[in-house]
Amino acid sequence: MFLIGEIISTHGIKGEVKVKQITDFIERFHIGETVYYKSNQDKLLPLIIDGFRTTNKGLLIQFKGYSSINDVEHLLGMNLYIKEEQLTALEENEYYFHEIIGCNVKTTTGENLGIIDSILTPGANDVWVVKSRNGKEILIPYIEDVVKQVNIAEKEVTIELMEGLID
Image (cartoon, rainbow, N blue to C red; front, side, top):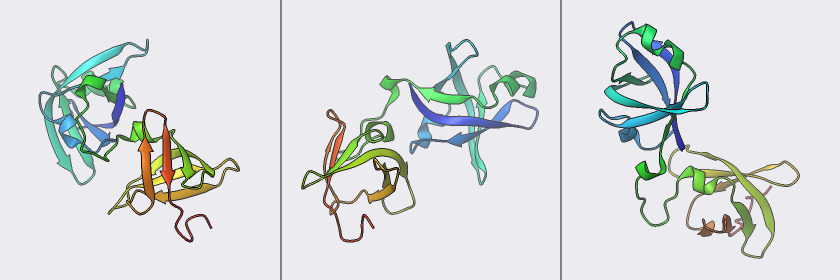
């Protein structure tokens, strides 16, 4: 299962919920799509999207069969997931966050820098946050000049150190 969002609040009285988007693919929330949440018993339960709109404060989603605020209150704080077969094929040199997070990072000279802990998306390119063994964070821009090789199968990334990258 892959995390795509979190239900953060209800909206109005007709069963809409506000969802914090945790995916680059907004189409995962389009009408007719199925998402899943974990019940209190850790059972995966499907939700079919019946309404979708964007606002300046996030996504507003309506689920099929959930027509009042009373129907959705128990969903507050729940994470929304998709199954692996719902993942979209990516272009060459594009990766899902879950494929990159946890990869070991080394330099072209073989120096081990640490593990990718998270990914920032500030604008022009993603920035991979590497936690070094001493707990220091190293910010690696995902650009061709720096990231030389990504081996998802081996969970390893090779980078070319640019001047000032680790200071």
